[in-house]
Length: 105
Image 1 (cartoon, rainbow, N blue to C red):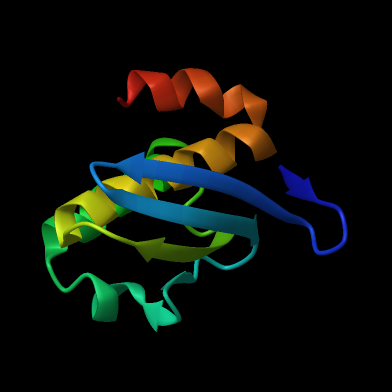
Image 2 (image 1 turned 90 degrees about the vertical axis):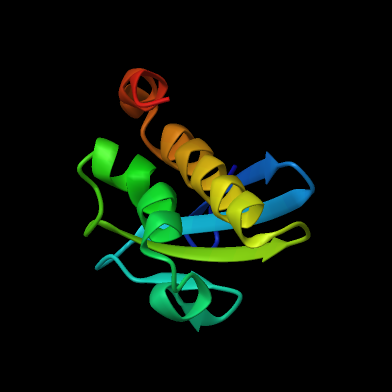
């Protein structure tokens, strides 16, 4: 869903019992999770790599600011839910990314 008022694109990701509500907008690559920076929220490098995978697959890591609200479940489920939410938001914003996102799993 694109919010015409603020130019955000929304995506929702779910994994296990975690739910992530993701907003993206064109920007410089800032990622904020529950009002905390990415390394602060996910200190484990593996979780950060999983979360950033959709952005790297589409070569848009430095082209979008990402804002995530995530709750429920454990840290691994939250990382997976965030990644799925980012992928869904990217697909809405740029439909041509769908094939690359599907190929990337």
